[in-house]
Image 1: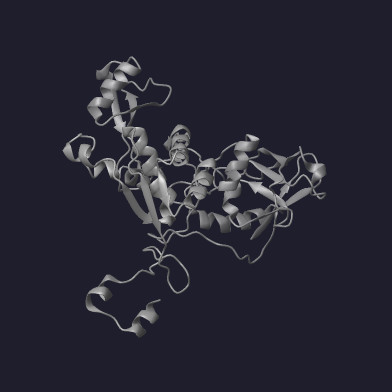
Image 2: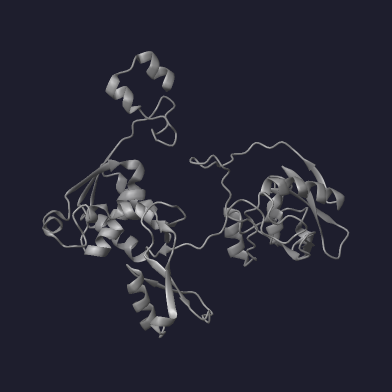
Length: 367
C-alpha cells in the first residue's frame, strides 16, 4: 500500500491517500470521503491539485467510503476500478483512461508514456518523493486477480461493449414461472429465480477474445472521412451491411465501407441459442418443427442463470415459445475442500485415470 499526499487548493493542508495501484493516480478524477468522517468534513466541496496533470480534483462525499480503511480518503479512478466507476457515474466524474491494452501507460506525463505500469509505479514513488508528496509504503494483504490463461494480473479498464436490453425478456421469464408454464425440480429454485430477475441488469454480450461467434455488427466509414459520428448496422455479411447503411443513413453505397466489430459474443449468449441451433434453426427444417420445444432440461443449479435463464429469455423472444417446460437441477460433486470441480481450478477427475485406472493413494494425492 503506497501512501501519498494531494495538496488542497488554496490551503496549507494535504490529504493523505492510500492505494495499492499507485500508477492509476494519473487517471484520478476526485477524492472521496465519508460525510460522517469528522477529519474531512471541512474539506468537502473543495479541491486538491493533481501534481502531474495540474487539474483541480473535487473532494466529494459518499457514504460508501469506508472511514476505517486506509486513510479514510479515497482516490477515485473511474476508468480503472469497478467501484470507482459506479461512483464516477453517480457523481458525474471525468473518466480518464490511462492504460493501454499492453499494460503500458498512455498519458503524456513526464516520461511515463509507453512504460509498463509496474515500472511507472516505482517511478512515481521516486517522483512523488522528490515533490515532497510521498510518505511511505506498507505491506497489505489483498486478493490479486490473475488471468487463468496467461497468468497476468487482471487490470480493470473501460471498453466499448454491446449490451442486450433484458427488461421485457426478463419480465416474461418471471411470468412463465408464475403461470407454471415453466416448472423447476426441486420447486424451491423458483424463489432464487425471482430474486435474480428482480435485480436484472442489461446483459453485456461482447467479449474481447479471439475465439467465438463474431458479433454481427458493422461500423460504417466514409471514404472521405466526413462522418462526424459512429455509424453502426447489424448485418450477417459485409454486403448486407453496406446495403443497410446506405438506406439507413442516406449514403452513396460506393462511398462507404463496412468493418465488422472484432468482439465475439459472450459464451452464454451463444450457449443460450443451443436449443435452437441444435435443431437446425433458423432454417425451419423438420427437426426444429418436430422437437422444439423440448420437454425437460437437466443441468446443475450453479448455471441456473448463466445458461437456463438465458435459454429461456432468448428462446421465448426469438420463437415465441419456451425452449423447454421443465428444468431439473441436480446437485454438484465437490472436491475434498468443498469446491466445485472445474477445469480452471484443476480439481477435476483426470480422464486418463478413468481409462487406465488409478490407486486410492494417487487419488488422495491429487485431491
